[in-house]
Length: 328
Image 1 (cartoon, one colour):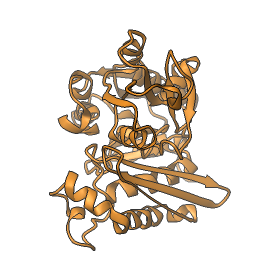
Image 2 (cartoon, rainbow, N blue to C red):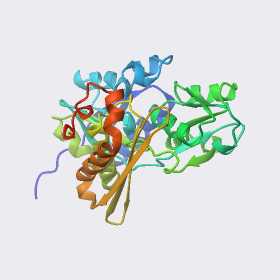
Image 3 (tube, helix red, strand yellow):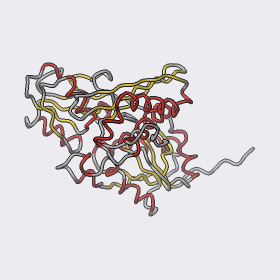
Image 4 (tube, rainbow, N blue to C red):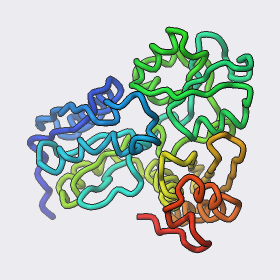
């Protein structure tokens, strides 16, 4: 019989120090202890620049990568073995020496309405203030409800809920999975269907990042991977990668697998919601990356290139047709 690789003796998980990030890291820790009960699994709590800069939107201060850089430094210098992220916060252009080694089973991918006043955005009066942290949500809300005022909303989950409760916003839009994970489902007044607010690539899933050369970790972490969630995430993240993967672009991608068919939807919009471009494709799950490229190409053909030329003028996609970069 082939030799079995010995179980890990010690693993350190790098994580942001927010309550939601700690829940996610503790969840991974508990799964690892189920697999390797003799392993010493600990958390390395860190504060990232994304957590520190709260007075500006992500699109203006460097994007989602601000939530992972400090954790990657801990991987580089050996203080941590793995980092746990909300997959939607992991840049799609992740490069060596890092690797995304496991995508865990996705929870609820939808956006959720939280309000102390209404059960639906359509019930809000003209000029009511809605808070959101993403251009993706903002563009889709503006398109459906042009009478509402959308304002930036930064901070961790508790900070955002606190701003709502102090009356700074009539409603806020958050990822449903985060509320559910922290036992705050009762705060959700309604869920936004994908037709109302198409989710962000990877939303609702957890991703585990390691150093690419840690083959031992890849083997130890393999049981945590969900194959269906991995295919969906690959399709979604390919759309984002093909279109620049930037917080400066209202971009959504959402895949669902039914039996042996993967259905992928993508969206690119003007930030003010004046233009929404949609595309979709279906195919076998193992064609996830090809489906992502197909949907991205459709979006570009239908006018996304013009939007990108305005918002990301230096990106290759914004140039002439055929300039789409390959997804890594």
